[in-house]
Length: 120
Length: 108
Image (cartoon, helix red, strand yellow):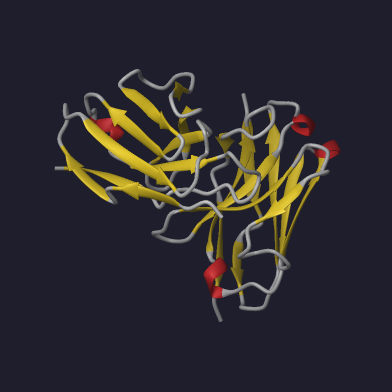
């Protein structure tokens, strides 16, 4: 069974930093592109970042480029999102999502999300 | 960047109704479009990919159609479990993987 479990969310002050983690199990993690998607309270889904299985390809949304860093540790079956210089508009539930196997595919499995709140 | 526009934003319907949600894309994404269902407090769930292919386990009352810039999600006979928010997403490009703004399907 595919399982994605996010952690690391919590309250942070504007300008602060936070590192999210996503523990994966039930599939060969290293062969799948992984993504972070966020959802601000009461709002829609916003894709944040993606990383290929070997970390060769990394992409970011314009809204987070230069402040967020996506990474993965295939030996630990884990995905990370380092967030710096956080702003009020970064407050959201952050989901990790697996991209279906192959090139350019939809997100077939999602974690339950971890909540990030940004407030002074 | 590719823009996605869903309509309507909110849809009120009754159990048994046939409903259609539209997703318009600012430039062609061929058939590389997916639909997701999200219930309150839950993660999104993939329903349809490649515009019209049903994900395993998704009831056959769901169907998708379209290509290029206009797509539709149809639920043939609404069931109580179907009241949720639906999102389209294009995956024709690596970045960004744009989502539509969502359509909330409410009970009339």
